[in-house]
Length: 342
Image 1: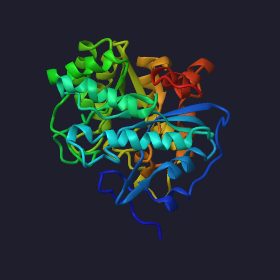
Image 2: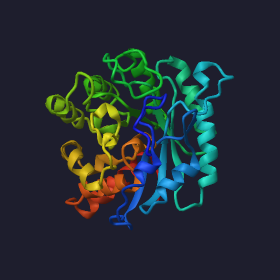
Image 3: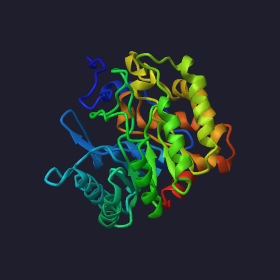
Image 4: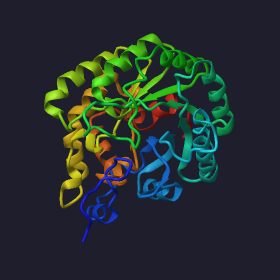
């Protein structure tokens, strides 16, 4: 019997390989080069997702040329002071990248780590250490920013306080980040997008990548059809800042309100594409393909769908795009923003 869906200790939908295996489908456009610009690596008590697991997913038929690791509080050096502990994550992901170099998928070709941008003058030397450790792979940082007062709205093991996006110290750190030519990934729920907008306007020289379609919520007090207008207004405003990019994905987390993981069979790519079309198409319309990139958000989204089906869904969503737009959405934007080659 296939286990019923449950949540991991880190507040993600548990992966059920046997459930996912109940649906397989041919790979669409298998020759299309892809950079997966957003995935995680971790070894947790109730979930292991290291290089073998990542390569097992990227090797399921799509042409995944390279990937970008995004911070997830993994492999921290707990012997260090708190602000230095994330250096352990960058060090570990660099070793993974070195092992994967030369393979069909250059895993962790880009690394986005964590430096607390509210640390003032300590931000720059910490960034310099991450850059030195990563051997040319360090591309930027992501801080813990996703927050909502509703107890149901959680997508991380640790729930940060309502900051730090509105804090002057955060903007000061963002300027230091920009001065080094590094990027800022931001995971924020849709009610926080006005705060992201203020950061984007305050630091126009900084490239900001908004994760997961700007976090439209559909859980707890939020309903997708009711919040769509507010989310759309925020997305449109953010698109007015040329330094902001958009990641298309992350919609298979439970905070989005979709219930594919509750069904007897896993979703098809057609079902995913139809469900996500209004969100994804609005983002592409607002930002343009040159500022959007599809992302897997694995293994988080694997609780709701498999890797080959996910990328098939993205290819269906991009079906009407021109050749240049498809290139941008699947590899070009990610290559430019994270300075990668394929």
